[in-house]
Amino acid sequence: MTHKLTYGAILRLFLPLSLSDVIMVIAGPILTIGLTKLANPETSLAAYSVAQNVAIFLESPIIMLLHASNLLSRYPETWRPLRHFMLWANAVLTVLYALLAFTPAYDWIFRGALGQPDAIADAARPAFQAMLLWPAAIGWRRYYQGLLIIHRRSSLVAYAGFARIGSLALVTLLGVLGRAHGATVAGVALVVSVIVEAAAVTWLARPILKSGVADPGARAPEWAPRTIGQIALWYWPLAMTQILVTVVRPLINGGIARSVDPELGLAAWPVAWSTILMVANAVRMVQQVALTLLQDRQSYLMLRRFTLAAGLIACGVMALLAGTPLGLGYMEWVLGLKGGLSSVAAAAIPALSLGVLFPLYTALQNWLQALLMKDGRTLMVNAGAIVGGAVTMVAVYAGALIWRLPGAQLGIASLLCGGAVELVWLTLASRPQRRAWLAAR
Image 1 (cartoon, helix red, strand yellow):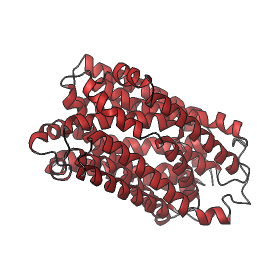
Image 2 (cartoon, one colour):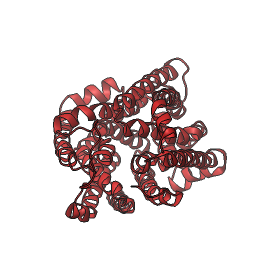
Image 3 (cartoon, one colour):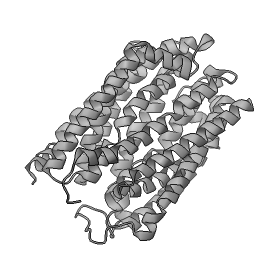
Image 4 (cartoon, helix red, strand yellow):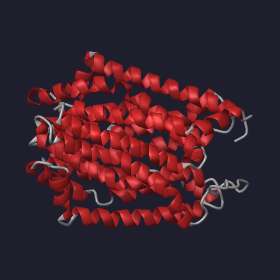
């Protein structure tokens, strides 16, 4: 892209991507509403949270396929090898998922490593098994989402997101009407919805596939990998980054399971986290915007200002939820946490106050990561995740075993501790890139 960048162009690319991420997070509240209307809602909420977090951990190596597709699919030398790599990665992760879901390894992880009570581990098993195709569907859709983004078709990504949330709501409704097992309803709804979204993204990308994915006139930078083996080596730090980011979620559940009143904490944490994430995810796609539009000093300055403004606006929304009756009203009237479940809402509200700055952290983290990825420095991105993840792990277990923090507050406090350290690392690591963009014409 050689024409002058405008804020209108940034918004046209960003807003549909932001909407798609918010749509994705809405799945949490929808499932929460459904589970509160079935038997044993506290156990079901906790079981669904644990099963989903472990499933997300197993999918985490292929999450960064979106970034890889954005960076590499534009070049004739790299897009076909990347697609073959995606297919192999999906197959390997599906086999690993099956081994964990249908062998004694399930009990070793859920009861042993994560310390889940027997009632929650038993309720989570069928939900986890139902999500067998979750990693492959995620990998497939992330690859095709990248194709749509580099061709400036971000609105189509949002359309596919609507298909996902609609199918999830439908399956959840059918499960509630049929009085099915709560956590199992959540697992089936999640996997069906992501398969529907993957199919929708593929169908919407047909014109791009027919006209040609890569730009015939583009030449890959020197750092770009050109074979499946080279892509695997280049992609490995990105995969490890997402693994390290995602591993804290089951570990947070493990820490909460060891805190005061673990069942209440495990039930309140997904409610608080889904609310915080719904706001924070609205700014996460600044990374894809930067990877797509960053080209010179002017675009660097504009995208930097846009990232900061988006993060601060999202923090303002989070402050409204945390500091006004909106938060409690949302939990009571939207999520249905009333009556016997009012204790879950009461336990989740204090975590929203701690999470006010989380959207700004999300925006800055994704901006700095994009600067490093744009220069091929995936190892530095991975190192930041290692540092931040280590601090988060220390914080969650120290908070549970030493300071005895309540469950939902423990979860967000530990994430903020790790996030602050990661931001320091990314800021220092990206200094050469920031100087280079400021010096560019």
